[in-house]
Length: 81
Image 1 (cartoon, rainbow, N blue to C red):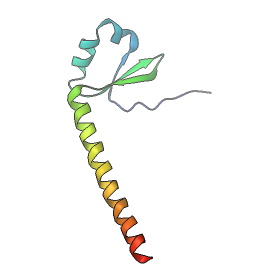
Image 2 (spheres, one colour):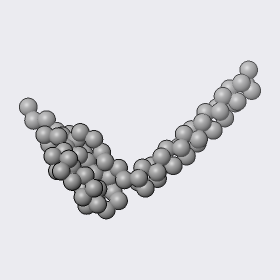
Image 3 (tube, rainbow, N blue to C red):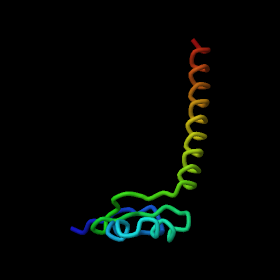
Image 4 (cartoon, rainbow, N blue to C red):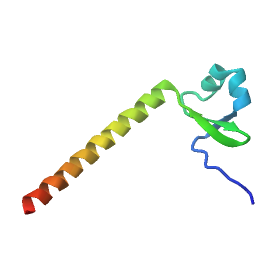
């Protein structure tokens, strides 16, 4: 059976390459996340600071929106009682 892994980046590097020159790998990503592979499977994602900050801002926005939506549903349910 052939094992496959989903890689969620366009750029990859081996863990050996990353150990030898981590800042060079990060620079090669030009600000985009990089999948670090161990035996051709993703071991972790190296996410530059700016990309991580943008991602966290988007997560916070979604969490706030979901919280507002859920509160509205709770209030409507309570009002019907």
